[in-house]
Image (cartoon, rainbow, N blue to C red; front, side):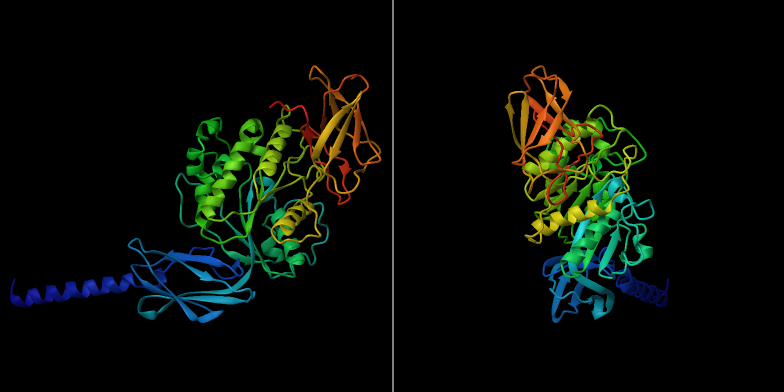
Length: 474
């Protein structure tokens, strides 16, 4: 090989290296997570995280439209990943964020961002239940979806054995077309928040999958740390993902960097046969999500509704477990929806509007401090035996009222632990007197403690008395 040939080879290699370097700086290879995209709703007046991936190690410059002189600088690491924080304004916008990369070139712009309140809506089929299905308590949809300040991000269904970093999905502005495939409960929750908070922008992140138990939604660290893995071995394969943490890994973990106001949750039906462990699992899942989001998230959820298809008293026991979590874990709230059922043979009640609105009332009271709203269903406060009668005191606001001619679904417990159908009446002071003809010495009482009993006692706010039993073994 002569000297000229050597020069040609050297020039070629140098050119190739330069081309490779240029290719590695292509702005088209700059990637943001799909949840940071056009039409997003970001948490207002907060410190929120931005993150993404560069083609190589970059020095990145971020400029927000609401503070154009406060440029944010961040560098990607050796894995090409970067993250930083920005302070969002109170003003709703619309706003934009620009990202400048190698040699100051614009590599991405996120437009039409609104600042408001963003909530994660998750669970199984009663949360997934969308407007394409039958909805009996929303008859007029002519103007229902005419609000561009309500926006949806629906996480694509996916499962994974390991935590993943990216998801499919996009922010969509509320319209008849975009709302059709979105959760009715989540939409009604968001719509009421929007109305009660002065037309504030509301972002709804839908991450749900019908038929799923709670275990796939729990992160692996929580399952191991809480020593709960042994309790999950009874899960069997079905048409929905069942593997521990598989949905958390694919549908929750990719969004834990996104700043949210809180979580609304509707799940439990798939765990009815393993109800005895549900309270421990649910408590651990909530704490695990709070740790992952680095935020003491408000967590509001729906108690599962009556259905005739459950075996034994599985649903009653699971509702009791849910009530335990609401009573013991702070910054949570439980919506009782046992009255919102129009077909006891259908596990998916088509009355969804009030479920979402009751969840919203829980948030309005506790997260937004609307003191004029009372979102809590009346609960058992105490009971005492008075001869053959059991006198029940509740936490009801105002005097309880029966919507039917007869108060239903009370049972008296005798000394042997047997249950007897009972008659109930409301006393002048608002207490409930319960008596069973065949029981001379009652020791306890139950209300709506079965799979399909629908409550018909309501407080002055129209909320149903929650199911209970006083004979629970410690």
